[in-house]
Length: 290
Image (cartoon, rainbow, N blue to C red):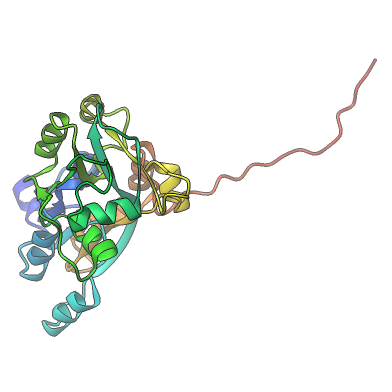
C-alpha cells in the first residue's frame, strides 16, 4: 500500500529531487527532516551542490525544486520561458555572506573597501607587509557569485583568491592558516545550539563588516540581517518548476509556512514572515486599598 501512495505526486507524497546550495545544508536538512517525519509518503532526495548546478538542474528538469540564496535572474527567466517553463519563487528567510578567519588572525573587522581590494588581488592592502589570501567555499557557490557581482562587477578575482570544494574543507583550511579569509554562507554559522556550528566556531571566528572604514562594523546575525545593517545580506529562495498540486509545491508551502518559518527563527536566521503577536494591555487604574 505504501509503495502505491509514494508513487502519487501530491503535496504530501511522491518522489522529488531537491538540489540546494551546499551553504544552506544545515537549514535545508532540518526543514526536510521535519517535513518527511510529518508526511511519511514523501520521498525527497537531497542533493547538496553549488548555486550554478542547482539552476542547471532546474533548467534541465533534473530537479523540480531548488534552494539557493537568490531569485533567478532576468536572463535565466528568459531561458526558462523560452522552454515554456515558468518557475515560481518564494523568499523564505534572510541570510548573509560570512567571512571567517583563524583565531590568531590580526583583526576582527573588515570594510567593503578593504575586501574589494583583496578580491582584486591587492593582497597586502589589509595587513601591511603580509600577503592575505581569500578562500571561497566553492568556485560556483552563491557567496562567490554574490561577491563577484556586487564588489568586482566586470573585474576578475585576483591571484590570491582560491576556492575549496565545500564548506567543511574551507573550515579546515582557515583553521590552519592565520593569513587567510574564508568566504562562506552564514547559514552554516547561525544556529549556535547546533553541534556542527559549535565545532566550526571552535576552529574559526567571524569578522564584523563595515561599508567603509569610517562606518560601524556589524557581525552577521539574525538581527543585523533583518535590519539590513550587515552589508552583505541575501535571501534564501525556494524555486520550483513543478505543478501546483505536487510534492514540490508541498515542500515550498511547508518551508514558507508557519512551521518552516519558526524553524528558521529558532536556527538563527530571520524568517521572511513572522506571526504577529497581539498583546492586550489592561490600562484600568489599580485600586489601592489601605
